[in-house]
Image 1 (cartoon, one colour):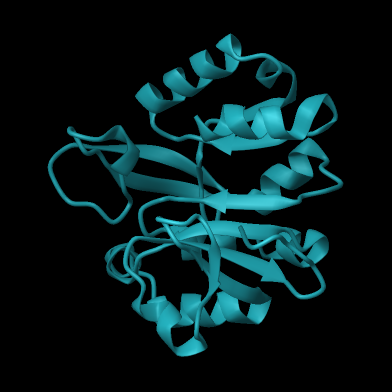
Image 2: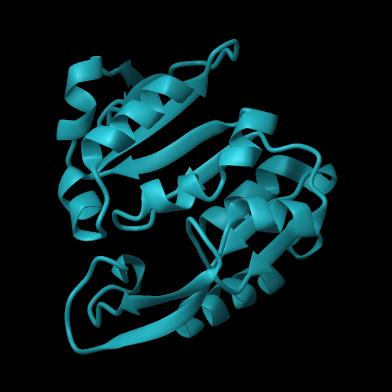
Length: 194
């Protein structure tokens, strides 16, 4: 859904790169892209998980919700998938601009952004990501370190689910967030707050 919405937003001159490692979700993503013009012209689908390195990772499958498959999950059903980095894909696609990086990967956000370090420094895109301290811990991450990384990158806002407004977050409270969507605006960039 977000891939096709992003494709509409960037128009024919933009580009959307979408990562999807799990076969069923990948098939649905590709079908959605094919059915939605102009998405077919501007979307690159990467059949891999985004993470901190080139490797194979285990994703635990949620039988009740395909949107909550997770590297930090538990259970008997899982799939081993290829992992790549955002930096690698940026190089492979020869991208010369990134305006936004959206990450919602059930606690693996620190790993994804670790694999985008070079691209984040080069392009300084805005970040939209989920922050859930408990889920970050479940994937082996450290919520305090991730909060520090986000604060060092720019001003951090929480999206108020009721109003849709961006509310500045006090520096000490970022690591305590649970299932929150945050926007990080790099220094020097302006953005409307609602």
